Image 1: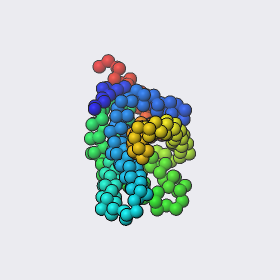
Image 2: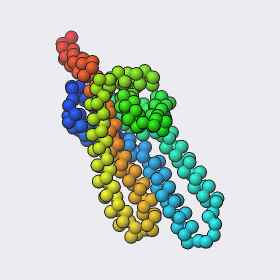
Image 3: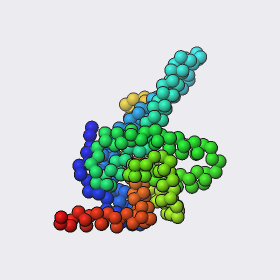
Image 4: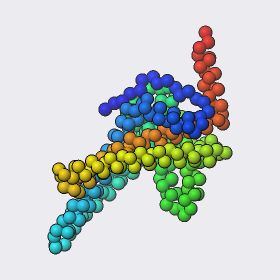
Length: 280
């Protein structure tokens, strides 16, 4: 499956109000739906399989224990735990792609460059360890910090790290400092945008969850209840993956909006267009 954006028009840079930024996020997603949705769905397949297997293994073990007076099969339990451990390790190793591939594709598209699903994956692969280090750092801070507001404050300051790395071709440390300077002075506005995008994503998740619960009930008529639940939860992971690009595209737009407001990037783009239209 290859979805391609051939010679897309560059993003028209301008200061965006919060409502305009949200509208632009959905407009970009609609325009390049096959590209962004394809990336998210491909990368969500391992997580969907792991989720389905976890639910199936849990319920099947519970049913066997309830129907049998014998001791649980330790070999089966160890085997299941090993599969789950390997699955979670694979999910960790894939996290740079799931977190950054859509952001890379959105950055390339915003600059008017053609990009494919495989091109986005290669772009992330070139910075794989830097992205993995960034994600691990964010995760460790979430575990180590006792005060959630402190973690949120730092995370918002670093929210444009990935677009900085892709657009400005910088390393992780430089991108973290650059992101912090871009957000500085506009922290509350950036936080509000992220909050609204996450709220929209959550509402979509709730709506899809209700639909999948109904589908799971109908599926339970055909197969056993725990098999139906395992399938529905795996499908839920795939469906929820379709909503993730909304948040990732919004991060890219926040990055460009901050550069427009701080560095007049829109005027630079306009000057380039005027120079290109001038006769030689």
